Length: 397
Ligand code: FAD
Image 1 (tube, rainbow, N blue to C red):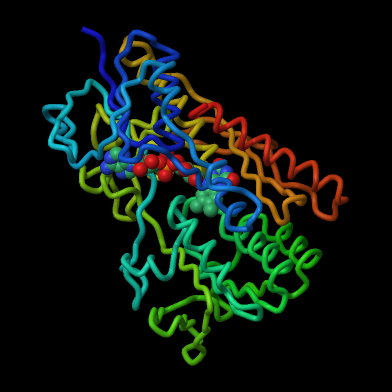
Image 2 (cartoon, protein in one colour):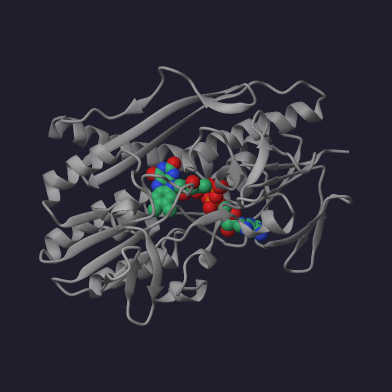
């Protein structure tokens, strides 16, 4: 009989895995289960929030995976897995049997870690850390914010999806406010003392936005201990100061997507430990977990990482089914960020499976140089757009 692989989640990691399984092994039966008819990328969602990209441009469908690649794409949600009988249960009541199961469910949030706010409050204080209606909500709140208003971001502790993402977001909100509401202010209350590409962001903020963006480190009054949703305030650990927001963006601490917990694949920190050579779960021999949900050594939680891991998983499954030894995979990540639509910066790295983990290759990658010319930054902004076109074509195109 043909092998059947079921993939949970049609995001960056899952859709890549499904597509590459079919490419490496056209006879394989591949089923992709995703509750949403379309996928809105988080990458590019800060461009929408900044007002210079449309939701349409960051929304992707599954027609090509279905019609061209021959993947059985089912619009449903996985609600349980029985590992012994290798069966997944769907919300609709159906169930499916698999030979190998792949899960790339992304993240969920630890609202319990922040007193005063719960998941339902995301309707008034959006996280916008999963793209779609949350992106539109934050955008519309910015449109309604008065000139002279205060935008407050509460930035998450490590580890979280997209390390430079919060700082790209405030950059592009500043881009919008500078043009339309120039008396406004942005305050970032951070659970950390430093962040990805910090020097490059701060250089760009000073150059383009003067003192519009104020970033407070955790140890310098930035660590928020409580949010008052009704009052729209955040109380930082200095104890007495409550920061009042006209628009608040609370990005909670994160953990692996709920289904990974339900299936019993997570560790005490809430993430999924895997054999980083193949991304096979440490808890189950027939389940592979990749993307943001997994513990992936030096690889950051990014769409680019998830896409590379999807190819690693596809190759590992095809080889295992043919009784071949797994490869020692090499992969890469680049995270581009825009500070204005014409000012791009990046961080890149190459990874190799070594000594039991995905480790950075010495001498590879790095960040954009500081003090560069505007034409250099404009080229990186163009590469950012090209990266988006390339990766979305590879995954859903
Ligand atoms: P996701 O892409 O989130 O996919 C998970 C999928 O699983 C979803 O479609 C979900 O519906 C589905 N799912 C969940 N549970 C179930 C279930 N029970 N049954 C069926 N399906 C289920 N990365 C970059 O590389 N570059 C960037 O510039 C970049 N910018 C970003 C900006 C922002 C603001 C944010 C928030 C993130 C950004 N990222 C970027 C990170 C990137 O979006 C994620 O790292 C990436 O999407 C992770 O892929 P994934 O497959 O793990 O999860």
